Length: 199
Image 1 (cartoon, rainbow, N blue to C red):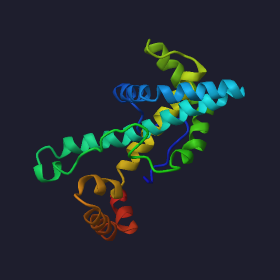
Image 2 (tube, helix red, strand yellow):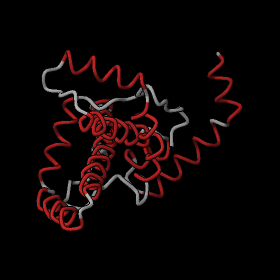
Image 3 (spheres, one colour):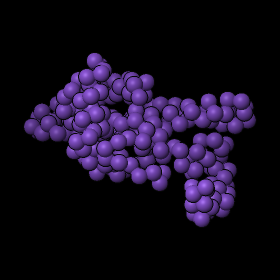
Image 4 (cartoon, one colour):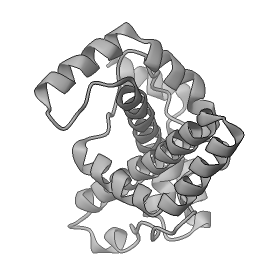
């Protein structure tokens, strides 16, 4: 994962409206699952079950979309290099399979999401954004949802930009991707990276 330290009061790569609309459209596929979960929550008198299902789904879809955004950007970067461009393909979206999210990866983001929800600066920015954008409603539910979506998108985006993941996206096979990653590690040792940063 990227070495960039993610702050509670700011986002390195926030989710834009284009990505948010894609995430919302993907959510529609899961309406039956959400309806079933709602019924279960009502029967058990545990509303948090339904809330957790919605937020968990938003988080995973946002992570996936953040990763896919980097794939789109790489396609643009290599549009004049056909041999590389032909390798850069996003996996097709499938129901109940979030291709670019590893098992348990979403749970690691919970502490950061909680810190962002508690952040006074985030709340202030949210209130300002709601004044400027009529499509955003200033409610607690929407604020929490957007903290989840922005955090998920940011995570997927930064993950896809690591050397290992970029090599997987750009190379034809895993063996070649591993070779490229090892070469980078040999060339860009911590000492070399530190020298480059200080120049």
